[in-house]
Picture 1 (cartoon, rainbow over the protein chains, first blue to last red):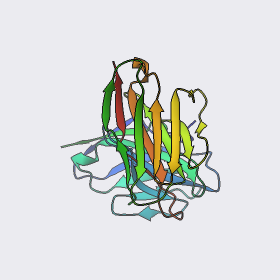
Picture 2: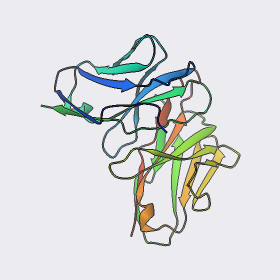
Picture 3: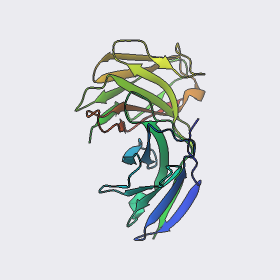
Picture 4: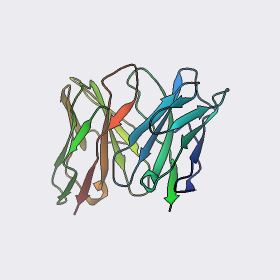
Length: 111
Length: 117
């Protein structure tokens, strides 16, 4: 079972920041927070991951609370192409542990 | 980033036939690949873990004799749906760990959509 909880859906205006929350209150000390997204009829796409510090890359920023029980994925300037289902997953960094997907958040970017 | 490719992208077959789906890591070696299945409007469900040179590990409820997995090389894993039936119609997706063990992210193929008539 997935160890994360996400809202089922969110809307965001094009050009605005999209903030996607995720609760992972039972996260273990060796587990990282990963974010993936799935655009319709495609395989999931890796976005970002982090342990306890905030992370940023060319796609998004990841803000993890100090107690690590929740996090927020931020898409700074959402475009229509960012419309997708976003999955927050916790998983150890090392080893061959698979990703266990929850239901994710369906983000709709509106023009 | 690392590239994982699946073939075919989509396939239609008659009930009772077998279908093979390939998953290749194009620019890295993957000792482990994962196979998922996704029904419409649902999330990805892990089916099995494919290990190079050994038998696959199946998740509870997944029939190993129905979904044959072969991982004969470090860049190729295959999933064969045997004696397919309409209820096997689904989107099948594979993933593999990227070439750098330090990063930990898994990369996914484009998916293969199976329709059984």
